[in-house]
Image (tube, rainbow, N blue to C red; front, side, top):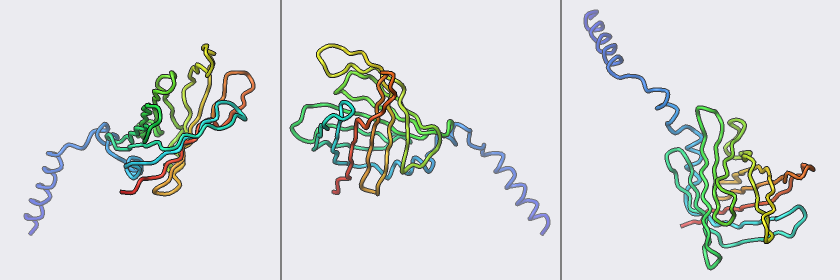
Length: 194
């Protein structure tokens, strides 16, 4: 009996040696709970966009937008476009949790404005149902017929308000010296049911 147990222990030891442990890269690139949370947000979403071009300005509301979401590895990819007859545009963003840095990363680009690629990160892990991210400073052309050349800061809050509703809000602060933020953009998402 002792010989049999010894043989089993030897087989287990050899098996453990024969299968190398996963590398740190493999472990940290695997989908964690954050990626699984993002996967719950895939599908087709109907979007209402509201934009306030300046503090106290009347909002510009755009209805009938559609966002298609899918997972690309551990990142949630979103492609937003008009769902009807509105002017053509594409807005693309990616959201993911960097398990090495322990924070959320986000990047967006929007063909409606010449602001380039807009990266943002969170400070820490936070709550996947209410993310707070800060964009890198960016140049803003303005809305007139000449380039105003403004620098601005922006943040982004993504609030999951249930399995079929989500809100993204951005606040802007222009580099004017007064440091006054205002809610500039709000996207309201409702999942389209098949």
